Amino acid sequence: MPTPPKAVWFQLNAGGEEVEGKLRDHGIEVFLNSCIKVVHSLCRG
Image (cartoon, rainbow, N blue to C red):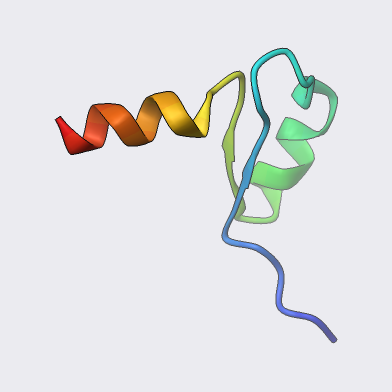
C-alpha cells in the first residue's frame, strides 16, 4: 500500500474545500488558496 501524503497543497482558486475535512480527518495537512512561489519568496526574505 502506498504511503499517504503528509500534506496537500491547493493553488490559488483551485478549490479543495470539499475534500479539506476528509484530508484533515486522515491527519493530512491542507493548504488552500496558497501560491508556492509567493510563500517560498517570503521564506527567503
